[in-house]
Image (cartoon, rainbow, N blue to C red; front, top):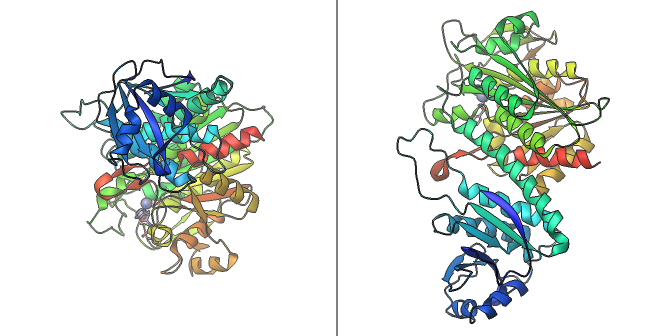
Length: 493
Ligand code: BES
Ligand code: MN
Ligand code: ZN
């Protein structure tokens, strides 16, 4: 799917479909009004039938004669002002309904709607991401892939001459973000028997080749030499060797401290000896979604050529209950020197992450953000709408909250007080890897906090947001937009 811009007016333009927002009370904007006039008031007539529901995202297709073959009318809700949510619903509705139809190209006017507090850049990005979302498919493992078109192959945003450059930039950035999200989604949706730690390393190498990044992959031997015994303890029960993957993107001044993104890459989480129940265990193929979001974000940043330095670090392993597996009660010495009593082998994410976070210090990062499908408790606390955000730094937390709301990929700040550290006490080691029944997302974050003393750090628990269950089962590509938005803001300041 290609995005472009088209200069107004467009009533003489040739297109398969024009996507027209309809305001409360059936009102059309100026551009749509001109098309209506040029086509013998066919749009007004269609609206007069009452066939377009006012609910934001409802659509009505009108066939026209002449250079504009169709108009897709999209309701933006019944309020006099359109808010972000209604705009997003309209965009989603429009591109979902275009998916089933024959138009091979479309001209979009959605962004002509006023959205409170949002500019053209935001509106075009939001619409473009909705278009790519509607077009996403994952049929690599179907013997007969769906051959019906997934939407128009080319989409043009019609804007005034003066706005052409801004619109083009917005569309190009949305494309980079969508490409990053698609990469994350493809990796997440790929099953555990294919997407192994070695497979993730290969994906990183391919990304490195395409965007000229420095990629390094450490195997078991090197991790042993580095004393990454917490990470290695997780991989022991699996026949798949663990991989510690790093990618370096250098777009900023050489002296500038990089941002490091550290992703949990458990390619399948059985729970290990603390075995999970059978129900929905298949969903644990998505336990590498943090790692996938690191690759997706690095891809987006590299495609945008952002003037920043970025390091991606992925701790990849498979958590299996093999005969060499770690036992509950085993004690390991992490790379940081802290000893850990592994009371539950299903709390494995924090074990691979703690060594990766210690390793991250080698890149002398100013800021480190880890991303992990870390706890079921986070899903209980926040549901599937917000990711959990933990940070000691108010400024960093503020940046991530703001980027999340700008990019419609939100997070919600959770506490990280020292008081909770009590819960991780072990009679035999420096720290236990679980903290009991209460505040599970918080104690998991507190465990990680012990390994992040050397830099500004935030932790995103994406257990609820990285994938959908049920009818629309699959990877969401989150939090690639949030992370990319955060880095775009860093690049500006
Ligand atoms: N990968 C899971 C977390 C998870 C569970 C994500 C369900 C999404 C849905 C993680 O490794 C895990 O098993 N966490 C345990 C921690 C517990 C043993 C302290 C959990 O949440 O139950
Ligand atoms: Mn687990
Ligand atoms: Zn896990």
